[in-house]
Image (cartoon, rainbow, N blue to C red; front, side):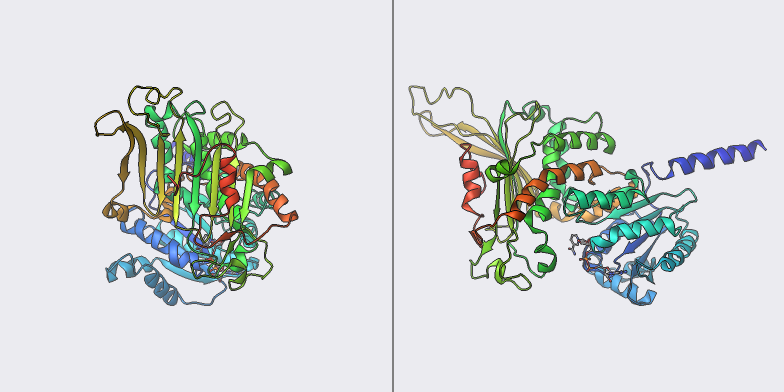
Length: 513
Ligand code: NAD
C-alpha cells in the first residue's frame, strides 16, 4: 500500500512538472514536423537534427514523423532525409541508421481524423523508442496554419498525457501587426502554455547574439560603462547583398520592416539594451528584455517621419530594380530597406540613440553591431604644446556574420617622433577552422528546445512590444506614397538614412569608419 502511494505521488509530481521543467539530459523525444518536405525542413531542420544526433544530444530514443499532404512511403521519406543530410556526413551507415528513425504520414492540417491517426502513431513511437512520452511539434508551414495545427493537436488528443513534455515550435512570421499576432497567440495559448511555446528567431541561434549577455555581464569593464554616460550611440546593421530572389510572393506583402526589423533587429536591440537579469535563466532574461522593449519610445506619425526611413532598390550593379524582379508588381511600394532611430525612456539609455537598419541589395552582406563611445570631455592632446591631435570615439564592434568576432578601436600614440595620436584595433576574429565547428543556428535552437530552455526564443510579451513599436511606422508607410526606387542596388541604402544620423551629428560607422 505504502509502495503504491509513493508511486502515485511520484507520478503526480512528474505530470505536474512535465510540461514546464527544463530537461538536463535531452535524449528522448518524438518530433512531429508539419511541413515535412518543405524547403526549410529539407535545407535546415534535418541537417540540424542530424548534427545533434551525431554529437550525442539525441540518442536512439527519438523518432520523427514528417507530415504534409504528400503521399510518401517511409522509404521515400528516408531517402529525402539521407539526401538532405548528405553535406553533413560521408558515413553511409550512420546516415541510414539516423534515417531509420523517420516516418511519414500524409496529413492535411484541416482534417481532424488525420490528427487522431497521428496520435496513435505517436503513442506507438513513444513505446517503440521509449521516448518517455516527450513530444515536440514543429510547425514549419505557412503562418495561416500555425493556429489550426495547435488547436487540433489539443482537441484531437495528440498531446502527451503520460508524463512527457509537449513543446510547440512556431516558425516566423509571428503575425503581420500587433492585432494579428495577438489573434495567433490567443489561438496557440488556448492549446499550449506560454512556457511550452518556442517562437523561432534564427538570429537568436547565432553565435554573436548568444555572446552578447556574456560580453556585457561577464566583463565588468564593459558593463560598467554600458549606459548613456559613456555610449554615444549604438548602430545595428543587418545588410543583405541579395535581392528578393524567388520569394516575391511572401516578401512583397511583408517588406524589410516586418521581415527583419520587428523580429531579428529588435531582438538584438533587447539583448543590448536590457538590464542585468538576476540570473541567467530564461524567465529572468525575458523579464529584462521585455522591460527594455517596452521602454522604447513609440512614435506618432510626425515622430515616424523624423525617425524612420524606408527604401526600395532600383537597378544597379548590372541587376534589375525591385519592381522588375520576377513576381513583383511594377508599381510595388514595398520597402526593401528600413532604418530607424530608437530612443529609450529609461535611466540607462536616456537620450543615447540606437540606430538600426536592414535592407536588400546593399553593397555587402553583413550583420554587425557598432557601439560608439563618447570622447573624453576634455581633449588634453588638442590643447597641448605638441602636434594638435584629434581623438576618435572608441568603437566596440560585434560581428554577427559572415565573420564572427569582436573588435575594439582605441586611441594610442603614434610611434613617430612627437605627440601624434592614432587609432588601433584590438581584434578577435574567429578562425575559419573554429567557425566551421560553430553549431548552426537551428542546431542550437533544437538543442535548447530539447532542454526546455527558452532563453533564445522570443516570448509573447517581447513579440507584442515589438509589434506595438513597429505598427505606427508600418501604418504611416501604408498610407503615404513613397518616392521609390530611392537607392541603387549595390549602395548602402537611401541618402535619407545618412541624414537621419547627420541630424544628430552622427554618421554610420560602417562602412565609412
Ligand atoms: P514550403 O512551402 O517549402 O513548405 C510548406 C510545407 O507545408 C510543404 O511541405 C507543404 O506540402 C505543406 N502543406 C501546405 N499545405 C498543407 C496542408 N493543408 N496540410 C498539410 N501540409 C501542407 O515552406 P518553407 O519555405 O519550408 O517555410 C515553412 C515555414 O518556415 C514558413 O512559416 C516560413 O515563413 C518559415 N521560414 C522559412 C525559411 C526558409 O528558408 N524556407 C526561412 C525562415 C522562415
